[in-house]
Image (cartoon, rainbow over all chains, first blue to last red; front, side, top):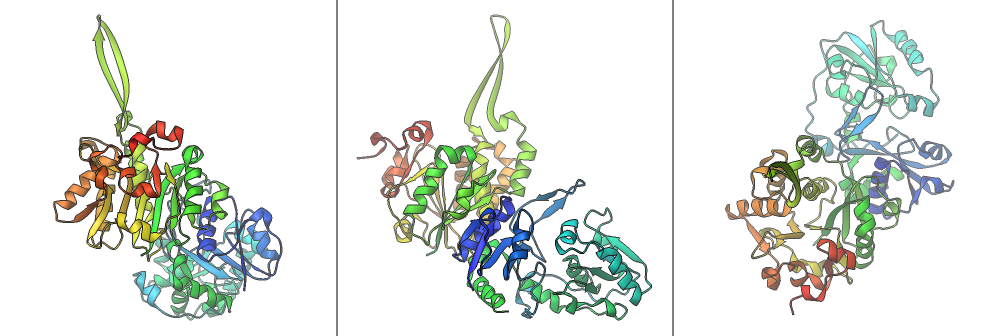
Length: 255
Length: 266
């Protein structure tokens, strides 16, 4: 499978795509030069034209912040993001924005290298956290009623209190998780954090719901497989030069 | 041996000489030798996809931001000296600038090197700092550069000068040396703690020498590569490196684009 990588004018995209394309010796073009082709489209993020290109592409490789130890970011009250570096992990995904469907690498090595302590199932459980996707995500996927639809779906299977959370909430997620019974999201990486903290996570997006389906919300269990697969799907920029990354690319292309 | 170069620049320096350096590096360096540029500000579009062995990274250093937050607003830290004096009964003020005390201007190099360590390939053996006012004169490959790099038991190679501080336009780091990380961390700590303002001079060459001597006192070995240039003010182009490079030290050489003949020891 041949790649065609594209960059936008945003500095994160520029940097990530430069490392991706140059380490894989792949053609790198500005997004303004995008042409629909049989080659696999590759880029970072869904803004500045890349989202539209993804929708026009039969196959694509999508890069974005990683699931664990992503580059340090902070969010301002006026919804701006401040980035403190690009030295964290980036997820690299085929034909999806969030998770590799059917990539089943359960090797624990990369996860164990993160030194993450997995907690037992939370016994102090009370409410369900519903994590709202960003406006960009809702618009991109055309699921504007996701929140109300998902609340209705949860209510079919549980009568617990539902607390809505998004990245601009003043109450930190860590605080909310302390008494959470379950964490529900479309595709949020905070769901992985919830599992780590001992809170079962459920997803509605196609590539993720096999790891936590809302219909089973009142039968809590922690699915750690998703964490191992996620850690095998994320890479630092300096790892793009490694043979392991090239092998990973070969693996996901063959999915 | 896997070798990469690291340098830093902003748009102004890119326009002045950085672009030429990158062009010359790209066409003269063996394809396996990478150049990492820590760029302050918007990275020029042509650097993103044109040059296969050039990697541009935005300057995003939390530690450097911390240093600037603490000391960036102090005019003294920018090498500005203000002297009040009386002349013919009148109170007067003299404002002068001394690069030896411009801690801010010369802080970009150490922090860029520190930042780059999170981005360079894991299998690198050596990382070479060069100033961006470098000319690449002819094709070079790793084997050509190895003589100017530290040996296995040495932490860093540098261009020492007999009478003044070292010329730090070229520093070769042995990334496999067990004390390398401690060495860089110590350099950065001198900045972020403000300790550098207790030293005799505040520019980075002084700091590199200061920390090198600290480590030499702990029996850590370094390699002075100046050779016959050791007693000369411009050792870079009298060390053997002149076969491949020219270093345009100071405004005159930058203007003419080369070091004059009298810089070379016959």
